[in-house]
Image (cartoon, rainbow, N blue to C red; front, side, top):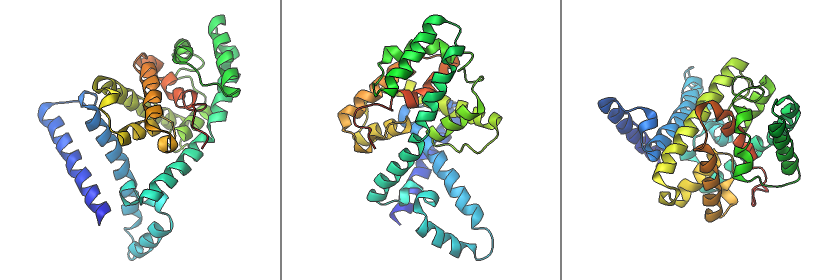
Length: 271
């Protein structure tokens, strides 16, 4: 019942935001940070609920659905119906799943480094990959120095190989089992939304976020923040915003890869 009440409250808030958008002709990227984040999360929750609704349509299937929800709460239930312990455990599981793709993404960057035309950028990319493989957390300026590599061949959003897009989809907790053209569109859309959230968050200020909001923002961007102190999460989120707010739309492939680059060797991310 508590979960239903929370879901109903979220639905009413989402409706108020959408109504205000229609009434005043406001676009998604013009909303405040908290409004944007609420709509983003609510859409994901509704998508998961729709799947349950579809499999409940056949006669008497609802009895089976209740049993499945009890047996597989992580896969079938949304966060409103998780216990506090389940929330931590399930976030750990999801992070472990996405973390499996991190080495594959880094290896791909190392493989395509020789294809970068500029000798200086080629050296920077190789150096960054080597440092990360030895456990070094990259500095913000080291990542931003490579922004040109991610705006065109071989790492631009429109030039990414299908296998790399599948690995990046897993890193973003998106399904990789789709055609390449659909994967590319979903990655573009997802990364654009995060970029818009980042701009709104920079305007609001990290200091205005609650501890839970900070941890949720970090988790969305690739850091398993459930076991990291709040201040370290704020520091990491500040580094992320420095990078994100420096990027143009054509360079968003770097923001997508930054999920791996900035979180892999951050102190406290052993889980």
